[in-house]
Length: 293
Image (cartoon, rainbow, N blue to C red; front, side, top):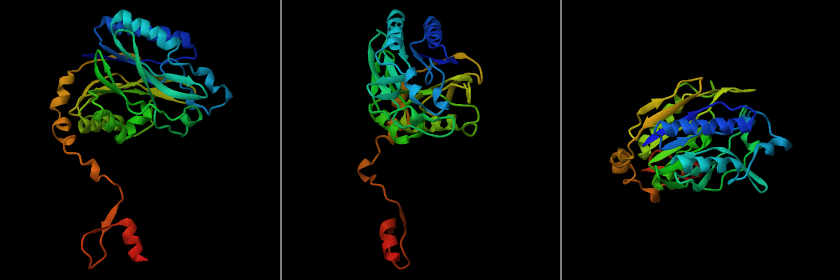
């Protein structure tokens, strides 16, 4: 399977951004892509860089809606699977959402970002309701695909849920800024996650200078052994292509060993520390504290 990650900047002109996104889809399909993935909020400015207000919902749209409809038609015509990311409005709530479109143009579903951050430049709790879709895995023409939207990639339990759901590839629509985290940590984080869970991971980052943030680019693809297979340039628009063989997942250490040897019935939580002198075995913190008192 050939993956294409669209590393683009976005302006305040949503219609122009969508047109550029559709042109990138045409280009990727002509290059033989089976799956095309877009970065976080691919067709709008990254508005969470500012505190939210009453006008924030102006960027939100329904799913299905005009953007998904345009890409559904293109996906059907081109025979390509598409993963988008946009600001979804649903009644009184709004979500950071990735619609997943199959190669026949069907909207298979949507993943809503589960974990919502809040700090300078990323005031996302001002805009987003925490997602309620869980960790779905989509059976697409390109394979079994899960989505971890930006901040969700930091949560091992979420990525493990995608692995247990049968994902062979997890795509990450991302809005990662220059200097946001220590250099190399994004790659290391996904390399470890791919190795521990036995799937490919593909991170599509946005790029470009906006009001507060400058987005870094550097989109990349990791295999189930934790190796970086392909990387886009930093600081410039690009389409990153990577050929992946999803059959490698079955032979990965995670599928052959780690997932088979899990003991979820024993993961009850609660830290332990060494028993007081003269007592045998470890003592849970709560018990040890009680004895100390």
